[in-house]
Image 1 (cartoon, helix red, strand yellow):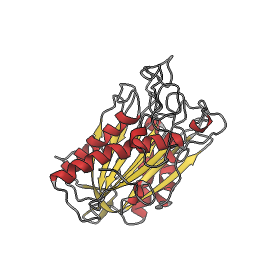
Image 2 (cartoon, helix red, strand yellow):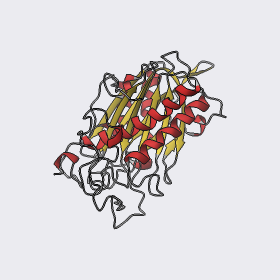
Image 3 (spheres, one colour):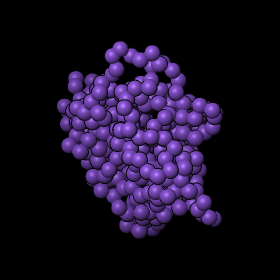
Image 4 (tube, helix red, strand yellow):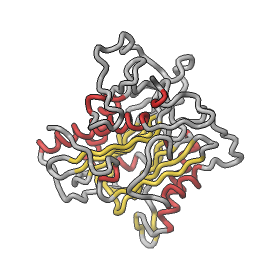
Length: 336
């Protein structure tokens, strides 16, 4: 089965989702919020060795709360977890959240990447700005949004190249749509050796990240392990965090399986990945807006598409990054 992208080739091709971005370019950091029109079934899978998270325990299938109102991806390392409070405040102002007696509690899990040592000015005073950036991101959501050096991707770096915010979607023949959103900030490389070719090339649709395919023959340095800061490979200055979303009707356990499958996209797009120096994490969202439940054959295709869509989103994050003053690394478009 060949895959086709959705009309926007963004996670918002999954009906019921909107995305908002806010950033401080002096800081070289920002926040991305995925807001659900209606609460959505959610799960998470963490495979990196250095995660930074909020409210992920409630996403396990054996725990009581089935759905969430939003998800947050943020820069700022542990400081960036404040962004979820800003998103939560924006949703509460709109009367969105989990109702307990007469109290509205927006459910907003979050994850962060480390972007503190990327050349930005982090002298923010007593309190970090992420709560206000989160509020701004949640208040300015839309179906269409730019990729690359925006939102939580503003300060992202990969091995030798700027990272960024990426997204992609897949429209399956059975009428189900899958979308991915990712902040690509890995310790590893998304390109093959010293070439411009992306590891994710076999799953590219059209020329969404350059149309270069795989290099042939593979370069002699294809298997060389390239790290972001080779002189300090143990520093926890990395992490790729993502959301995989579907409009299929899933249980919480099935959403967990979707998050697991989407991690295959990390392995297809980044070398190496899931290291002790990364906090790699995938949230899963199931809006159920298609009304479709999946038989086994359809479920297998669904999970395969999750990995492919995630790999494409990671490549697009790096492909669309744009230069800015003070950058430590060049952008992909400058590589000859």
